[in-house]
Length: 435
Ligand SMILES: C[S@@+](CC[C@H](N)C(=O)[O-])C[C@H]1O[C@@H](n2cnc3c(N)ncnc32)[C@H](O)[C@@H]1O
Image (cartoon, rainbow, N blue to C red; front, side):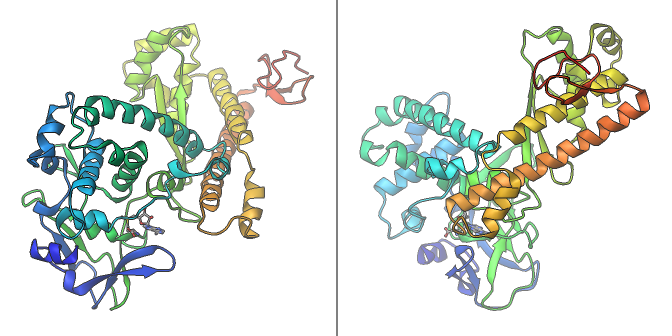
């Protein structure tokens, strides 16, 4: 691969080499010192994997362009990679890059049932299950629309669903995304640059030159000869790292929980409420990322304030053009919203297969083999539960403050003893018996 890249005009390779590292696996090592900001590597546009290059390929290009509507970016790149793997020699060109790719991946879609089960309750668990189904559907569609129609290009035995999953994970774990000036974006894979591992200790240091179309990597910090060179994949939480890249960062400060807020279209006043959500920059189904630094973003409260509007408050709100739900609408609405949040977050937390404290103990005792799939899944579960606990605490504090300020009393359900809001049905046992 390196000799092909050098002949293709890649610069910087003489000062770098591939090497194995105990913590990150294969990566790139410096052969000399680099100052932060110095250019380390440049890969010219001609050798990048891009959708444009796939379309321009004289053999696979016409077939890809004949599929209407066109395949997604990831499917195009995955198909291109599989095409090169099945038709090109591994000695030179893109074929030599494919030959250097990992034979398998540790993305959560490859987890055994018992490994994924460790993250039960997490968004990773749900999304991975959905992804498994989606991949099957997408694969069938690809066979129908493309692979089955050009079997000379896409031989069945080299374009199985397992091959497709491998190629998708190649794209997910190695592609780089860049925004272009015109509001467009480009997703590309760059041989050798895709051997760089992630560290949050370096700044963003891979750049795409829109004019030349070349990709460059700068030193994200000062390096001594023999150091591993890193790039920064971005502020990615563990659930996403594991799904796309197949690894986690223990104690990841970017951990998050994606809260999905949804309302059935048959719910009363749905149309009016939909308008209010849109004017608040939301939608009737909105996904909000709860994070360690902002566990209860204001958009969650804005969404729920609108969702829980009664008829008279709704009429008042509809007459306001702006985002009136950014503030408390009424004490009773606020209490209802916060009560609902506390209960919902509690049931999300109850849904985790193993609770936070137990997971913490298990990880400390070495119950899961470090770096293994179950260990990674445990870290995802831990991170998501941490975020949800912070979110619940914040909702509880806000609720207590509103109740104190408004004079709305708490009451305890006589049936299950759960503290509830006066005159509301107890959400846990569904009884109206308030004490
Ligand atoms: C762009 S590739 C980097 C090169 C890769 N190590 C290889 O041998 O092909 C991304 C993959 O490298 C691994 N990786 C990157 N950064 C890592 C890190 N900080 N810790 C553990 N694995 C990492 C993950 O397997 C990830 O999917």
